[in-house]
Image 1 (spheres, one colour):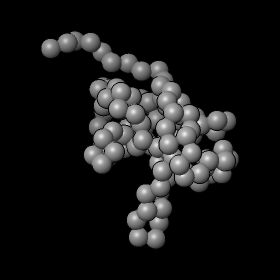
Image 2 (cartoon, helix red, strand yellow):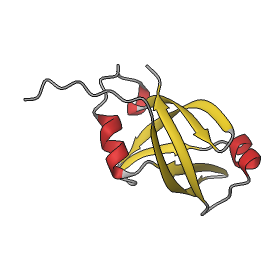
Image 3 (tube, helix red, strand yellow):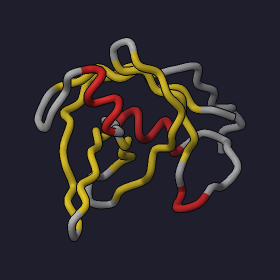
Image 4 (cartoon, helix red, strand yellow):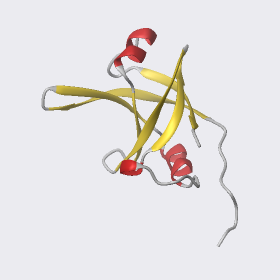
Length: 105
């Protein structure tokens, strides 16, 4: 067993914006790629609700704090993208977006 400590300053990736609809609501997400999701899963962070990890995110010129959530369906973590970010950055369903993500301890 390794005694290595996993640390992470930030990660950057490009992913497609997608919409998940339930009842009358829609939620917008990007899926964190597999390698980055594995890195997040290994971080020595205290447990949070639903297995979430608190993060600071930047897309374009917009920075905010939110959480990423594990998703069996997406086979990794998903990052919710709120309407104010989508509007400010002019992104819509299916657009590729570059994300800079940093866990908050």
